[in-house]
Image 1: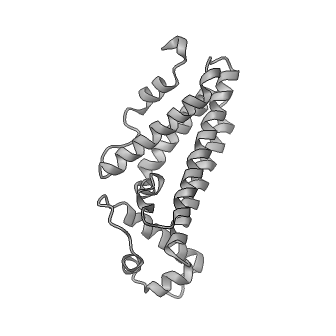
Image 2 (image 1 turned 60 degrees about the horizontal axis):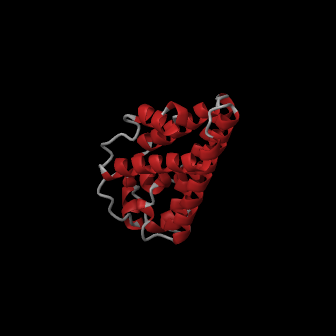
Length: 196
């Protein structure tokens, strides 16, 4: 075990935590259970993370860097604002489908009873996602999509739609893929008033 580099061990701990979050029962995760899963002592966990909250912060760091990195790529590759908005929503749904354990962090389910600063960080994450949707919709409006007066309302609606799909995915024990039926639903959410 001593041949494992500190960065690798940290990653293994976070991967194990994410793996434990994939169990649909959603039992509260203890450091004792996490240590047992890794065949480590709790003291060994605390050599890498000062607290369980810091472990969850590591997962939130992963979520933020992944999601916002992908949003930046979408903004660079999609010229039309409406395409950006659709791509952002599809990516958010796919991210959850590909990372079920992270979905429980995204919806705050895994953070119940943990340090409240973790939920505050997730609230900021939602605000940033909504801002990215607003920017895409503003671009769409400037390109003649006719959404000028509805940018904020539609951005809020898109985020609510995504979080609703995430909740359903998690509460179904990860059986209801959040992306099922999404293309038609997203098109309805983004339809210009004159096209509705």
